[in-house]
Image 1 (cartoon, rainbow, N blue to C red):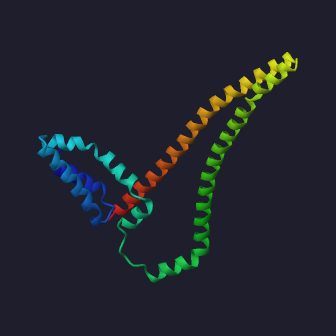
Image 2 (image 1 turned 90 degrees about the vertical axis):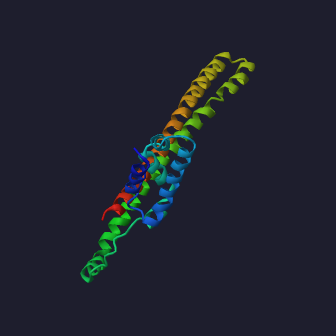
Image 3 (image 1 turned 30 degrees about the horizontal axis):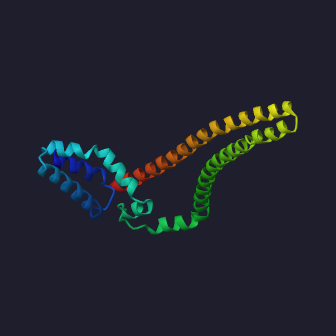
Length: 199
Protein backbone atom coordinates (compact mmCIF):
# COMPACT_ATOMS: atom_id res chain seq x y z
CA UNK A 1 0.00 0.00 0.00
CA UNK A 2 1.39 3.40 -0.95
CA UNK A 3 0.90 6.68 0.90
CA UNK A 4 -2.12 7.87 -1.09
CA UNK A 5 -3.92 4.54 -0.75
CA UNK A 6 -3.25 4.55 3.00
CA UNK A 7 -4.52 8.12 3.44
CA UNK A 8 -7.56 7.38 1.24
CA UNK A 9 -8.38 4.37 3.43
CA UNK A 10 -8.26 6.57 6.55
CA UNK A 11 -10.34 9.24 4.78
CA UNK A 12 -12.93 6.61 3.82
CA UNK A 13 -13.15 5.16 7.35
CA UNK A 14 -13.59 8.64 8.84
CA UNK A 15 -16.20 9.64 6.24
CA UNK A 16 -18.78 10.17 9.00
CA UNK A 17 -16.83 13.13 10.42
CA UNK A 18 -17.05 16.64 9.02
CA UNK A 19 -14.20 17.32 6.61
CA UNK A 20 -12.63 19.99 8.87
CA UNK A 21 -12.25 17.30 11.54
CA UNK A 22 -10.74 14.79 9.10
CA UNK A 23 -8.15 17.11 7.50
CA UNK A 24 -5.87 17.47 10.58
CA UNK A 25 -5.74 13.66 10.96
CA UNK A 26 -4.88 13.13 7.28
CA UNK A 27 -2.22 15.88 7.47
CA UNK A 28 -0.75 14.29 10.61
CA UNK A 29 -0.34 10.86 8.98
CA UNK A 30 0.91 12.37 5.72
CA UNK A 31 3.62 14.22 7.70
CA UNK A 32 4.48 11.06 9.69
CA UNK A 33 4.95 9.08 6.48
CA UNK A 34 7.02 11.86 4.90
CA UNK A 35 9.26 11.99 7.99
CA UNK A 36 9.89 8.24 7.79
CA UNK A 37 10.66 8.49 4.09
CA UNK A 38 13.21 11.24 4.89
CA UNK A 39 14.77 8.85 7.45
CA UNK A 40 15.48 6.41 4.61
CA UNK A 41 12.44 4.12 4.47
CA UNK A 42 10.65 3.41 1.22
CA UNK A 43 7.09 4.69 0.88
CA UNK A 44 5.65 1.19 1.42
CA UNK A 45 7.84 0.62 4.52
CA UNK A 46 6.83 3.99 5.94
CA UNK A 47 3.15 3.17 5.43
CA UNK A 48 3.61 -0.29 6.96
CA UNK A 49 5.28 1.29 10.00
CA UNK A 50 2.08 3.28 10.65
CA UNK A 51 0.21 0.06 11.41
CA UNK A 52 -3.14 -1.22 10.14
CA UNK A 53 -5.80 1.34 9.26
CA UNK A 54 -8.29 -0.45 11.54
CA UNK A 55 -5.99 0.08 14.55
CA UNK A 56 -5.59 3.76 13.68
CA UNK A 57 -9.36 4.23 13.41
CA UNK A 58 -9.89 2.40 16.73
CA UNK A 59 -7.35 4.70 18.40
CA UNK A 60 -9.00 7.80 16.95
CA UNK A 61 -12.40 6.63 18.19
CA UNK A 62 -10.98 5.79 21.62
CA UNK A 63 -9.43 9.26 21.90
CA UNK A 64 -12.58 11.05 20.71
CA UNK A 65 -15.14 11.66 23.49
CA UNK A 66 -18.65 10.46 22.66
CA UNK A 67 -20.15 13.97 22.89
CA UNK A 68 -17.54 15.36 20.49
CA UNK A 69 -18.09 12.44 18.11
CA UNK A 70 -21.83 13.11 17.99
CA UNK A 71 -21.21 16.82 17.46
CA UNK A 72 -18.60 16.37 14.72
CA UNK A 73 -20.38 13.75 12.62
CA UNK A 74 -22.26 14.87 9.56
CA UNK A 75 -25.93 15.43 10.00
CA UNK A 76 -28.68 15.34 7.44
CA UNK A 77 -29.39 18.88 6.27
CA UNK A 78 -33.02 18.20 5.29
CA UNK A 79 -35.62 20.18 7.22
CA UNK A 80 -38.57 18.45 8.82
CA UNK A 81 -41.96 18.62 7.14
CA UNK A 82 -44.91 20.03 9.11
CA UNK A 83 -46.65 16.64 9.33
CA UNK A 84 -43.45 15.07 10.74
CA UNK A 85 -43.26 17.74 13.43
CA UNK A 86 -46.95 17.22 14.25
CA UNK A 87 -46.48 13.45 14.56
CA UNK A 88 -43.43 13.96 16.78
CA UNK A 89 -45.36 16.26 19.10
CA UNK A 90 -48.48 14.08 19.25
CA UNK A 91 -46.46 10.88 19.74
CA UNK A 92 -44.01 12.39 22.23
CA UNK A 93 -45.77 11.00 25.34
CA UNK A 94 -45.31 7.50 23.90
CA UNK A 95 -41.87 7.65 22.29
CA UNK A 96 -40.35 9.83 25.02
CA UNK A 97 -41.60 7.43 27.71
CA UNK A 98 -40.29 4.41 25.82
CA UNK A 99 -36.93 6.08 25.21
CA UNK A 100 -36.62 7.13 28.85
CA UNK A 101 -37.65 3.65 30.00
CA UNK A 102 -35.08 1.98 27.73
CA UNK A 103 -32.34 4.34 28.97
CA UNK A 104 -33.32 3.68 32.61
CA UNK A 105 -33.33 -0.08 31.96
CA UNK A 106 -29.86 -0.03 30.41
CA UNK A 107 -28.51 2.16 33.21
CA UNK A 108 -30.11 -0.13 35.81
CA UNK A 109 -28.56 -3.22 34.23
CA UNK A 110 -25.16 -1.52 34.19
CA UNK A 111 -25.52 -0.61 37.89
CA UNK A 112 -26.65 -4.16 38.65
CA UNK A 113 -23.51 -5.60 37.07
CA UNK A 114 -21.29 -3.28 39.15
CA UNK A 115 -23.35 -4.07 42.27
CA UNK A 116 -22.50 -7.74 41.67
CA UNK A 117 -18.81 -6.86 41.49
CA UNK A 118 -19.06 -4.88 44.75
CA UNK A 119 -20.82 -7.83 46.41
CA UNK A 120 -18.02 -10.16 45.31
CA UNK A 121 -15.46 -7.84 46.91
CA UNK A 122 -17.61 -7.64 50.07
CA UNK A 123 -17.74 -11.44 50.26
CA UNK A 124 -13.97 -11.54 49.79
CA UNK A 125 -13.56 -9.07 52.64
CA UNK A 126 -15.77 -11.26 54.86
CA UNK A 127 -13.67 -14.35 54.14
CA UNK A 128 -10.47 -12.35 54.72
CA UNK A 129 -11.73 -11.09 58.09
CA UNK A 130 -12.78 -14.65 59.03
CA UNK A 131 -9.18 -15.65 58.31
CA UNK A 132 -8.23 -13.77 61.47
CA UNK A 133 -9.63 -16.75 63.37
CA UNK A 134 -6.00 -17.88 63.41
CA UNK A 135 -5.30 -15.08 65.90
CA UNK A 136 -8.19 -16.28 68.11
CA UNK A 137 -6.68 -19.76 68.07
CA UNK A 138 -3.57 -18.44 69.83
CA UNK A 139 -5.72 -17.16 72.69
CA UNK A 140 -7.48 -20.53 72.94
CA UNK A 141 -4.17 -22.38 72.84
CA UNK A 142 -2.82 -20.33 75.76
CA UNK A 143 -6.00 -20.91 77.78
CA UNK A 144 -5.63 -24.67 77.49
CA UNK A 145 -8.17 -25.45 74.77
CA UNK A 146 -6.08 -27.09 72.02
CA UNK A 147 -9.02 -28.73 70.18
CA UNK A 148 -10.86 -25.44 69.78
CA UNK A 149 -7.58 -23.74 68.82
CA UNK A 150 -7.02 -26.33 66.10
CA UNK A 151 -10.58 -25.78 64.84
CA UNK A 152 -10.01 -22.01 64.62
CA UNK A 153 -6.65 -22.49 62.84
CA UNK A 154 -8.27 -24.78 60.26
CA UNK A 155 -11.25 -22.47 59.76
CA UNK A 156 -9.00 -19.41 59.53
CA UNK A 157 -6.71 -21.03 56.97
CA UNK A 158 -9.74 -22.21 54.93
CA UNK A 159 -11.28 -18.70 54.92
CA UNK A 160 -7.94 -17.05 54.11
CA UNK A 161 -7.48 -19.42 51.16
CA UNK A 162 -10.95 -18.67 49.82
CA UNK A 163 -10.29 -14.92 50.28
CA UNK A 164 -7.09 -15.12 48.22
CA UNK A 165 -8.74 -17.09 45.39
CA UNK A 166 -11.85 -14.87 45.45
CA UNK A 167 -9.70 -11.72 45.31
CA UNK A 168 -8.12 -12.80 42.03
CA UNK A 169 -11.56 -13.81 40.72
CA UNK A 170 -12.97 -10.39 41.67
CA UNK A 171 -10.15 -8.68 39.81
CA UNK A 172 -10.84 -10.76 36.69
CA UNK A 173 -14.56 -9.97 36.85
CA UNK A 174 -13.86 -6.24 37.33
CA UNK A 175 -11.48 -6.16 34.35
CA UNK A 176 -14.06 -8.06 32.29
CA UNK A 177 -16.80 -5.53 33.12
CA UNK A 178 -14.48 -2.63 32.26
CA UNK A 179 -13.53 -4.32 28.97
CA UNK A 180 -17.19 -4.97 28.21
CA UNK A 181 -18.03 -1.31 28.91
CA UNK A 182 -15.23 -0.08 26.65
CA UNK A 183 -16.34 -2.47 23.91
CA UNK A 184 -19.92 -1.20 24.13
CA UNK A 185 -18.80 2.44 23.92
CA UNK A 186 -16.51 1.61 20.96
CA UNK A 187 -19.37 -0.13 19.11
CA UNK A 188 -21.60 2.86 19.79
CA UNK A 189 -18.92 5.23 18.45
CA UNK A 190 -18.45 3.09 15.32
CA UNK A 191 -22.21 3.05 14.75
CA UNK A 192 -22.42 6.85 15.10
CA UNK A 193 -19.46 7.31 12.74
CA UNK A 194 -20.91 4.89 10.18
CA UNK A 195 -24.35 6.52 10.41
CA UNK A 196 -22.76 9.96 9.93
CA UNK A 197 -20.94 8.71 6.82
CA UNK A 198 -24.11 7.66 5.02
CA UNK A 199 -25.12 10.01 2.28
